[in-house]
Picture 1 (cartoon, rainbow over the protein chains, first blue to last red):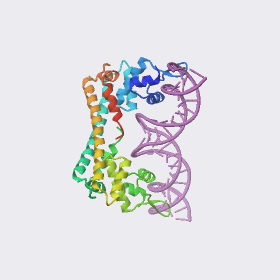
Picture 2 (cartoon, chains in turn purple, yellow, blue, brown):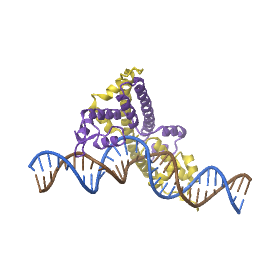
Picture 3 (cartoon, rainbow over the protein chains, first blue to last red):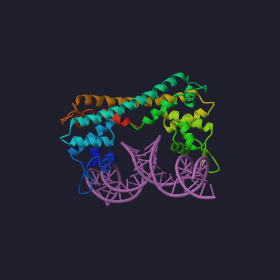
Picture 4 (cartoon, helix red, strand yellow):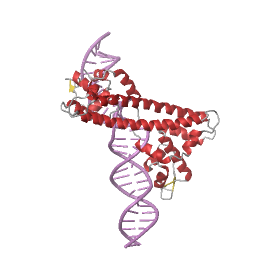
Length: 145
Length: 145
DNA sequence: CCTTGACCTTCCAATCGTTGGAACCCTCAT
DNA sequence: ATGAGGGTTCCAACGATTGGAAGGTCAAGG
């Protein structure tokens, strides 16, 4: 099975499969005589594992850990659980940050009449919002999803 | 006021101030005789505006729009409101994605006994989760916060 | 006056995950 | 044999931010 078929079957783009291979997340694929990458059912299995972990928001580094534990038949389930728990904590922190932003903006949107007049509480708030210190905290915690 | 003081007073790092200037988000700063950037109270005002908008999760591109509207005394508040509303929509979509991830993981974490035994529902789920199609949708919607 | 340290300047690189494109090679069907 | 549609490698960009190197400037104190 070539990379295009593996991509379609796993939901990981061909570009990303090459990238994951290059960075060592997944092992180097077998090659055909003409140097095409060749994927087995077992390789597909791994690719699907990676995609599902990405769908759950795990970073590539975390997926590396999970793959290691997955392959290690003697792993302690406590290790996996801890990684998952830590990840949930991160997710929840991001959720809180986004909710805070949405709530603040929601208040401002509700206060803005939104017509052809120029005065606008949203801009006024951006201009001089007293809640500077808390916001710094949020900003510091903000990162990519 | 030099860039370090402006950074401390605005909450925007010196690095980012230079970057914002370079990319045209904010105008070029005045310079002293020795080519140090020189910031006025009005410049600080703009920097704080930018920081607050970033704290609310607006992208730099969106902040550019907001700055334009802020400076335009004849803007229609409806324009600002629409940008804010669109942004709330994006935030809510990200929140939903993250909540979905956290909920799924939460179920798995609860199901994992988390001791020294190797069997682990978390890894089993990553290995073969039937909910492939929905996940693709989530993945497609996922982006930076 | 000179040194020291803390600041400023520009430029270049890295992060993270992903996509796009160029230039080239391979395979299969017409 | 020719062309379409794969594959291959390599290089660059996205967005926002940080780090660092190499050099100029400022204020303090010896």
